[in-house]
Image 1 (cartoon, helix red, strand yellow):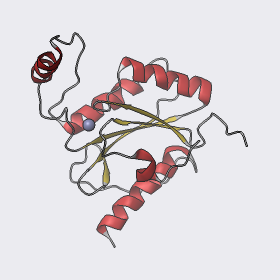
Image 2 (cartoon, rainbow, N blue to C red; image 1 turned 90 degrees about the vertical axis):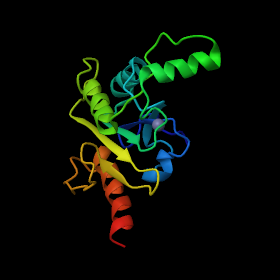
Image 3 (cartoon, protein in one colour; image 1 turned 60 degrees about the horizontal axis):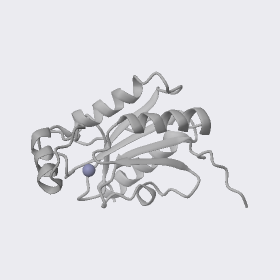
Length: 177
Ligand SMILES: [Zn+2]
């Protein structure tokens, strides 16, 4: 049986490369349902924007979920510190931005804004940021450090609405049962 290349949930998940994050398990995803883009820090780098443009225009996705996480290796270091570490390891100073950050929620907000303001994306309304707590596996909306996920009516039965329902389920099992 041939599987459609277009993600059934019409959603792209941008997350960090951190080995503790398993997006498929976290959201109960099956092959064929989403695009998953990963890099150090879950940043909206030029290559992420390129992939999003392809994903939307060629493969029909309409929503983007940015999932950053606590205890990120790039959190709490300056650009200078990370650049110096890379230079010590490789003998060469990186000439690209390394993407370190001091404020987790602000970093997610930057990625969300960069995606929302990318002219090559046809669908920029459904871009949302979340933070995964790697200690307990809970997910909260970014910008809400106290962690209340407010149930909202899904905008559609598929797409981010479905994922958001799963996010809510994860939170519920941790806090209510
Ligand atoms: Zn990370």
